[in-house]
Amino acid sequence: MSAPKPSANSNFHMPSEDFRKAAEQLTEWIIAYRDGIEKFPVKSQVLPGEVAKSLPVHPPENGESFDQVLKDVERFILPGVTHWQSPNFFAYFPANASEPSLLGDMLSSALGIQGMLWETGPACTELEIVVLDWLAEMLDLPAQFHSRNNGGGVIQDSASGATLCAILSARERATNFSANENGVGQSLTAYTSAHAHSSIEKDIKIAGIGRKNLRLIEVADDFTMRADLLEKAIEQDKKDGKTPFFVCAAVGTTSTLAVDPVEEIGRICRKHNVWLHVDAAMAGTAAICPEFRYIQRGVELADSFVFDAHKWLFTNFDCSCYYVADRAALTNALSITPEYLRNTATESGAVTDFREWHVPLGRRFRALKLWFVIRHYGVEGLRFHIRQHVELTKWLASEIKNDDRFELSAPQSLNLVCFRLKGTDEQNQQLMSALNKSGKMYLSHTKLNGKFVLRLCVGQTKTERHHVEQAWEMIKAEAEKIA
Ligand code: PLP
Image 1 (spheres, protein in one colour):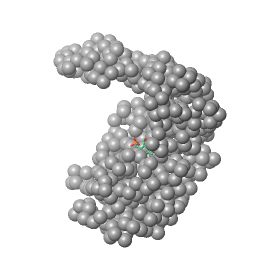
Image 2: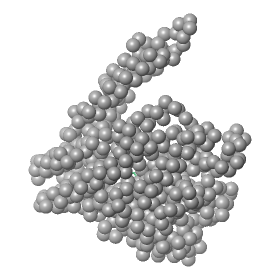
Image 3: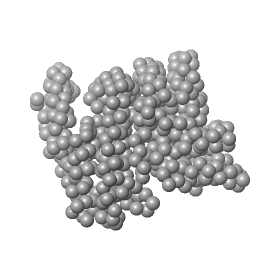
Image 4: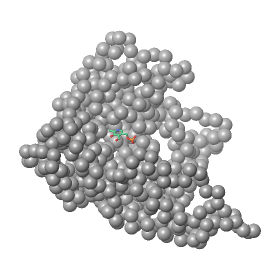
């Protein structure tokens, strides 16, 4: 395929025939990449600045062929790729993807819908409502989060963004919608556990609440929030003339996947009229299996709930699912209607305009990829893979527990195991570096009780028993060298 050249009756666009060839070539490339992904080092080995240095400083004056571009992907981009889709990726939390989800995303790109209003994307809006109701049913979420009641779900870009919306809704509810008009004039206080994700603190700062008004509640030995201390903190703040307005409980903390006692926390929130947001970013997916629904205990007391389908539900980034019990509390906080967005469908009151359900105005047709995933796997297919990940993690945790050289650093929860070599922080750091440098696996770390701890999360789409067994063999072999 040659580089584009304008002619008397053409322009610079890619003709359909060239697009067909390029699309076929790229499809073959993607299939070969995914099938052969294990030959790449999981964690990119490039040094800072190396990728940028390999690229031209100036853009091309004349168009180039797709062949040339694809060659440069292999030469300059691939070395700087960390292969998140590798079955040997065990770091952080996964961002797993699957073939049906790639297809859904491709179609979304091809349709190129900007679905800010029902008017600008009726199917984009209505499929999203239906699929998020399906998901609510799949997770057995309480009825208040279904669109048939006063609530409903929306796809957002991230759990961080969804939590920001929860904070803004809570802020407006607590101030009788005066903060939007006049600024946060009163001293609002928010609460989450010392193990909550950093996005809560970031969102509190963005929402103008002030970092000093966020109370980080101590955790128990199993790293779950101490509900008794939460209540004490709320009562103290009330005595001091402050207005407690927001609590975020974690269903699966980032460091250890600890599940906060949502039921107890929820009762406290109800008693003190405080908004309860549940952050189930990673662990939420597990509730599609009935045996893991214990993580949802008390969620019926929540005002909002978020989980990331783009972490563990085989749906590529971004796809954060945010549910509210009272959609009016959300849209009243975020709604703004300039003249140029007015339309008869909105004014009829018969439609949902998702632009009012999150911070950005514009939005992609993300429901397509979720729809493709659920229809391809079926709920049973999804359960099968989630169960397999949890089983493999349990197996690994029992191996670690039975090996004298290692210790579990937290109770194993769902698909995450936290452990360390019995030794110094430096030795554990050395172990992690050696494993990650090998290119054969990738895991990450946290600090628990002041100690450096390794985290291994089993959640990649194609991870199977032999990958976890191989990871364990490598961990033991590297540990042997360090001891
Ligand atoms: N909440 C928890 C518990 C998380 O673990 C994470 C990320 O790992 C987040 C929120 C933020 O997720 P996102 O990248 O979707 O903003």
